[in-house]
Each structure stands twice: as C-alpha cells, then as structure tokens.
Length: 457
Image (cartoon, rainbow, N blue to C red; front, side, top):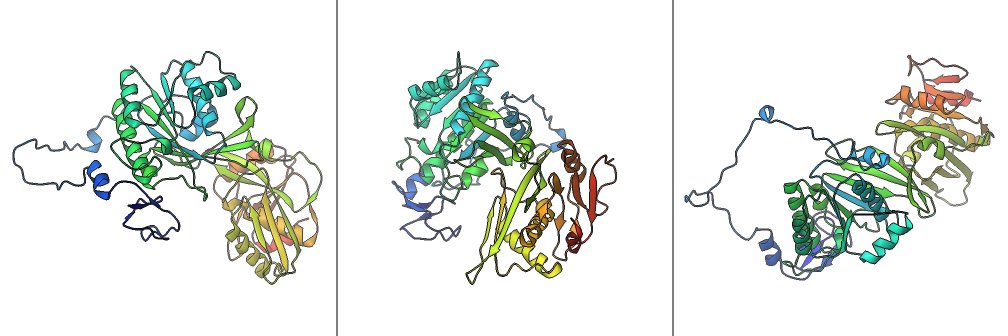
C-alpha cells in the first residue's frame, strides 16, 4: 500500500498529491497490507454496544473539581536554557519530541542532559538506532563526561527495548535516538514508514506514561524543515521541541512548538563549542554588535520570547533594479510583511521602492515574526533609500498598521528596560506607550504616525 508521510492517508496506488492534506510528493510505498495495519491497531473488529454480560466494562466518570490534582516537583536537567523551554523541567511520565536538521546537535544536547541527570541520581536508558555503543562512548569522552553511569544500547526493535526497560528497576528517563529507526516486529513495513513511526511511538508513549517514565524521542526532519512522519506523532507527545541553527553559525536555538506543561513561545539559546553546547544566559549581548559607528540601514529592535526580551539588529539595503520585478529578499523575517511595509512607506511617506531591489537581514541568525520590528524596519529602509546613517545605539520598538499609525506592543516596559540596561542612548517609541519608566541620559522620540519618521535625524 501507499501512505502519506504528512497525514498518514492510505492509497491503493501511488499519486503525486495527497488528497487529504494537499501536500505533493509525500506518498511512499509500504510493505504489508492495510488489513494487517488495521488489525494491529484493533480496527478490524466491530464494537458491539450490546451488554452480553461478559467482560463488560464502564468508565468511572468524575467531576473535575473533585479530582485531587497533584503538583509534582519537576526534574531539572541542570541546563537552564533547556529547562526554560520545557517550562521549568521534566514532568513525570511526559513524552517529548525533539526535532532538528542533521548535525545540528540533538544527540549532543541529550547526551549532556542525560549526563547531568545521572549525576543527580536519576536512572537513564539511552537507546540509539543510528550509532553503536562505541560511538556513543567516543562522543561522551570528547565532551569530557567522566564517570558516565547512563545505560546505553544500540537497538531498533521496540519489543526488545520495552522488555529491557521492564527488567531494569526504577528507570526515570528513556531516550530514543531516533524514532525513524525504530520498528515493531508485528508490522511488516520498513522502519521509517508511517505505520512503523506511528505504532512505535504509540507503544513507547503508553508504556512510559503508565510507569511515570519520561520518554524523549528524536525525530528527523524533511527537506521542508518539518518533523518527518505523520502529524499524528506531534499530537501524541506532550512537548515538541525544534532545534535550529545555521551550519556556518555557532549559535543554536531550541524552540518550543508545543508544550502541555508550559508556554510555547519560549526559546533556549546555545553556543556550539569544542566541548559541546554551552548555554547563552544573556542572548541580547551576543546578537548586538559593539560598533559605535553610525551605519546606514542598521538599527536595533526588540522581540519578546517567552518570559524575556531579546534585542536584535537588522540591516537593509536598497539598490537600483534592472529587472521588471525587483527582488524582495529577507533573512530572518517574513517576506510578506516586508512587502506590506514597503507599500505603507510608498503610500504614507512617499518613498518609492518600485525600481529598487530590497534586501533585509536580521543579524545573528535568529528568525522572528514579532510585529514590534515594524518601526525599526521602516527606519532602516528610509535610511537605505536616502543613504543616511542611523545613529549608533538606537533602538525602535512599535507596530505599524496599514493606516500608517504606530502602535504599542505588549511588554513595552520590559523591552525598554532591557534596552536601557544594555546602554542604548536613543529609543524611538509609539506616542504615550509607556508611563512608569524614568529615563536618565536617554533620548526618547515618540511618534504617532509613520509619516513622522522623516523628521528623525
């Protein structure tokens, strides 16, 4: 049979487009029949609602207010950036999915996490379907991990893994690297197929939740950057994390995409060094340049990730275009939002970019869609087209509407306090956006409409 890797829809023959989810080139062949897969999940038997008196069971319904909800103490990984994204640490019996590009550092991060957990007395089992135990040992020695007491094995059979974990007492953590290499002997399809990924994750999640074991699954990603396998896998886990970063960049970003125990807009930032991944406690300092020179098109702005404000810098460039449709290129920002900002500047400020190629880049490799960058983008583009430099240590915070009004964004006070703490001397804000901050040795420029940016020097 043929199945879609994105949604799991089954087909009798290959087709280029999945009619269920609309994705192209996601239909792949699997061994076995649909009947075998359905029988494994128990779908081949019809459910009878008649009470024949044999093995009949009924759920015990409870009132929510009467349920004694226990707030169990979380388990810390001793990696503060990792614990931040998790929402304060690991929850007993939770399922975590960690995805990312090959070589980004997923296995390194988990190995450091397991090392810290074993030092705190937690029993961890690390199962790899991609590396041998000798390779894992070489990696741990390279990272300087001494007296590493975690239990490791190289295996891909789910039945064997669960029997092994059952034979060990008091296991707290189970790491599977990766779920695409796991398989169930009851299914005839190959490892990595939709049926195998779904069934393997289902068995692991059920086993670990019933015993209070934290299970961490490593997932591969497709060429589009999505975690490979059906979307059902993302719904089965409690926490979904994505590890991202450029291959030519030392910085790695751990982003929470789903979290049943905390916020989903939190990020953790790491630096890849020779001895492994190092936490970055103050990300604003690494993303901001130390240059005191007035530079054309460069300005700082603020984004809010989870519970903290992060300051970034962006640069723009406008050059004459010699093609009918000028280029609009962005790195780290939404290209559609750039087109909207260009239309607002043309309509409200008279800045014509119709014959210009426009390039916009967020420095440092971090990606954002925060609307608080709108005002900074407008000032940067004005500087680029007018060939005028922006004063150093200048930051702009504000959202720009289609009518040209500059609006305040949430957590304005936290963003401004972070900017003052890092030594910014000029802060451009929407009018009447803050009232409870005392400014000393800082120039505050308040604007109400985007047309007023032409008066800023």
